[in-house]
Length: 501
Image 1 (tube, rainbow, N blue to C red):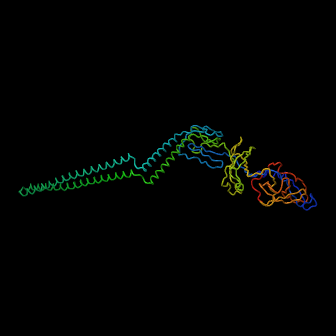
Image 2 (cartoon, rainbow, N blue to C red):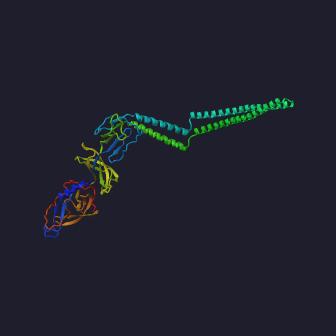
Image 3 (cartoon, rainbow, N blue to C red):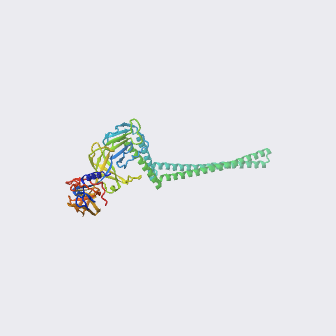
């Protein structure tokens, strides 16, 4: 919004005298003129060119304070913020004290509220245990097993070997015992057969022969049973030895597996797990540090969502605005291209006549227009060097940014220029009312005033335009009036657009 234009137009309306000169009549002030001129006098003045916009005063930073989180600020332009991540997840924060109320002014470092950190401390302990476990696994996978583990694994190998030795010894004893048992059974059969043969050869009674035959059959059956038992016993002993040998091999393989370094992929996974655990620990430790909410800078309390004795909300517990203020405004697309960061600016709140100085701090690279708006605008933020008492965030303000200034120069209304850039001319009226065209060199040009560097001098009467055709005219001679102000008096220029002729 270009408020300075209206002021300049008002000055032109008061200062410009309408001087009518006939081009076709019998005299200078003929009553039936066909063409008349509007004139003014070139004068020494200050020509300034500003970009002017309306916006609001806003806090330089706004904070949403939460227990267990690093306070992050949202700037006047809306950048930043978002709040820190609470490392303790759903950690509860029972509120113990609340020191502030809405609207209270505080200083940087002032205690605002406190909460019980018991739950947060428990989260730290859990996070530390996770880090220790991750470190142990990484060390084991990187360097192999430690000495204690190696000793345990070696003991398992030694035990398996001892069991193998015992199995082999048991196999030998079993084989010997089985051989004796089998031989005893064979001998019994042989003896029974000899007795039967002897009794039969000596003509023993049939009853004796029958008994010998029965005895032979019995020991023969027992021999068959003994052979089967010996076979099974020997097989069991052999299987026990084989099992013991497998146990030794397994123990040796287990030793090799658990004492050798892990693969590169496993170590990489261990490292990632350790990093995750360490990050969680750092966050948990940081969370404990923010069991007390303190003012991050000088400012004022906006909202308080806390009650002592009740758990704090999961969202913002206190919102806070900094004492430092800025001005936020929107400029048109035609003006934004003329701005650069660091330009001097003047800000005036609607509620105060005191002008505040500052500098252009940010220019949004993205337009704020859209939705079918006819004018595309871009948001700018102006820092303020100092703020008078009574200026509050949210107040309407006018922002003016100085683009250029020419001091104590010959100036004329920009409407007096004819031609195009680099080839401007001005119509000049002499004392006799004759109008001639003079080429001029133009310096700083605004929508209201033009700096004349060469071509005409202060005091010359220039034509600013034509009056409407009339059949009867009233002559108002005001050609000598200096509408630009005398003695170098400054009359502000336009809102930053040059005269595009």
